[in-house]
Length: 208
Image (cartoon, rainbow, N blue to C red):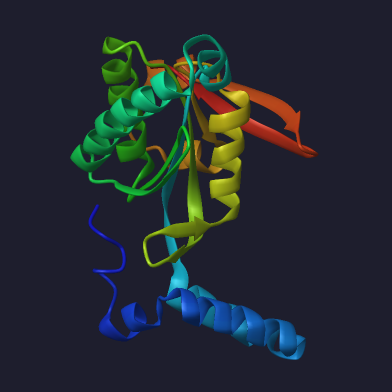
């Protein structure tokens, strides 16, 4: 998956900036009667549909307490190097990294799932654990550096709050978009439900 902004038509790429995004939000606040039209413009300039991956390093707080912050930062550095290379190998884009989290996009859920499984294998060889959530849907992408969206929020809940070490969780929408499901994999995938932050989440625990 190549850079989203580089692939946009020239006019749209020119409008995909923070300043334009802020201008439209301000205009929406000042003119609520034009909200529908402004929302349409925001989606045209910033909207894209893709798979979103949210990765969280396992045991961050515990490792900080036992090994110290410098050791944790060194582990995060190793993790980001490994994860970024594998995401690129599966045609994905790393949008941002924050502390021990990695946020990435892929054209398809299949690519995201295959990347996630490779990430688990490679991280385990260096003694690093992670949990991953994957969603699929419309997101708002600003300058390929920040993104917002419902499926991104759900993937964040799954990857950061619900998944345990080496667990891959998919939103219902992401699971429905997965095309490489074998009969065995469909049977192995566990549909689960959990309430978190007032949300009743249904999701799938995928086999690694």
